[in-house]
Length: 317
Image 1 (cartoon, helix red, strand yellow):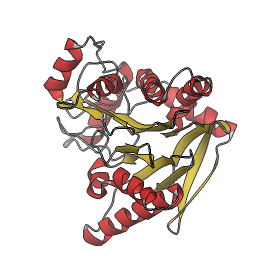
Image 2 (cartoon, helix red, strand yellow):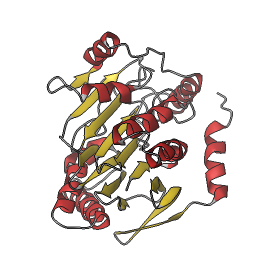
Image 3 (cartoon, helix red, strand yellow):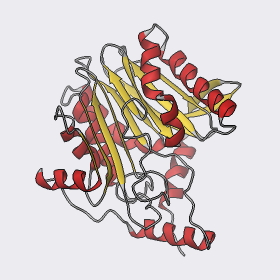
Image 4 (cartoon, one colour):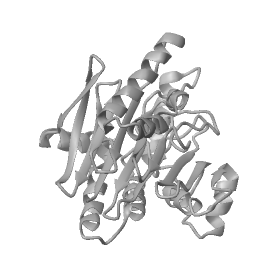
């Protein structure tokens, strides 16, 4: 029995590729998560992850990534790392450390260099065009783009091991050094092989306020189904923020339980995720929110084709 779930349509091809290896027992949960996310990091047309990720207000690409092993709770994370090709691989290597497993900025870069990770200028030509267009649009003041396209993965392998992993370039036009939820354990990701795993995508500042990924796993531990856990946790956070702060950003989560069942919840209308298991091949699901209930349907081939066309379209200033 195995299963894998990933946020957004951008997970599709990567999950297709690792699913074949999970099926044949060629790889376990660790490698599946890292390989899948690294493939997404390397694709230059996804403007929120890895190479091609959109820069901060100083036109510098700062990346966050994390990995958690649900067998022993070990985890690793990098935050605001610059000019290294695959931050998820660095985070995974850090998860093997008992201490010093979360490194930021220059410290993360020193660790990556010492351990032989590949350096690369992560600012793509397309990202530069996006940046310059945004500067023109704003003219006087640079403000962050409030969107959420973090890639997050939860993987269950045939040995019943569960892991969770994330990677993101964070908010477009963010302040230098800004860190969201993606690399924060319990918020952007959490895994417990005896229960399940969850990963989040959205406005990190709001997701962190509910320790959302830990909350979902905790609800599963109490006996709630994975879908119930996702909806209860997300609706509670959404409603509390509206009550106390009078506003709330985008919040979306996906999760799996120890039996490979999946769940999702969102407070937006255009969320998507990808799921595959020993029972079904990789499929993209479109998610809708109505009256605090989450519904989802399979994406059409037309929708899938249009997704890549719009992202790979030629950009001009």
